[in-house]
Length: 434
Image 1: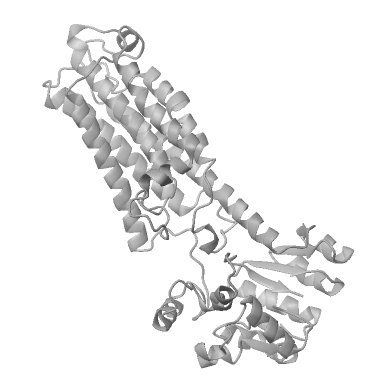
Image 2 (image 1 turned 90 degrees about the horizontal axis):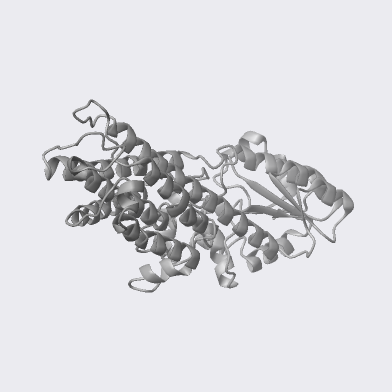
């Protein structure tokens, strides 16, 4: 909070709204000494001295416009992402320098012209609502992209590897027919992808630091996940084809099985049906898994008190739920309707192969859960990692300090006062007010 008010007034307000804890004694001494400063003391420091502080001051009183811009530059040197709120003419320089300048609708025209966002209702809750909705949309775009691209990677692996299966005529035998691929991509997987775009904001959406705007949608996590899940999907479907054709039928690939059905092509047609059913189910189940790309499907919300919240979490997005359910059931008529299966889709009905399909589906789900567990356990590929000072939110020292204070659900000392005043949202903003 950067304000022109008296230091005592500023400190009292900061405690009331949760910018600083009510009892400064709970902070390390070096942090407590600089948590509230007068502008004259802050301006007296050189840039090097400011950068050497364990934590930047959370409250600066008697501010001039130059003080606010110096604080913005100090935050920028610490790789912080800043939102500045203000309403006066003297706030205009800092509003324009911040990453996001937010002016009050009742403020001066100069402030509103310098800001990127104008709050027409003058309510700070609107900032929180806008951030929540923006993060929800961004997350859903990532889920949508990950769902489509990972399935494409799996299909490409399956088709390229399938070029190695050659019949007696020397022609490659497709492990899945072109029309099956079109059916999966156009009908089966499209609706779950649309459903992911309708996902609600996750329970942790407001606990994350801001996104790095330079990275965009294709973060390291999305790219690596796309390859991991795609390779896993391609491997499982390829193994299914191999088990049915080579394990149970001695490697009989028939003659010209890409064009027409014949008795010699029965093993290939049964293997294609198994691969088709399995690939469909893997793509559909991955849509449920992508409801959260780091947390387990079986506990999407870590604060949920229910012992087994899986069904409730899945049914929360009813469009996605029915898209996956109906898509999974649609496999059976496509596999078993006479003539349609052999003449159009180039596969035939199956029996014991369903055990392979179900088994490989469970292997795929287990692989996804293990990969998510590895990401959480070793804290790898976290798109929201952020550099902070020694005692800031997210640092090792800060986590140890909070655990030692046994504050329960209070997530950082910056939020203690917020919890005291029963506020519900953690905005993760480096917010400043004139």
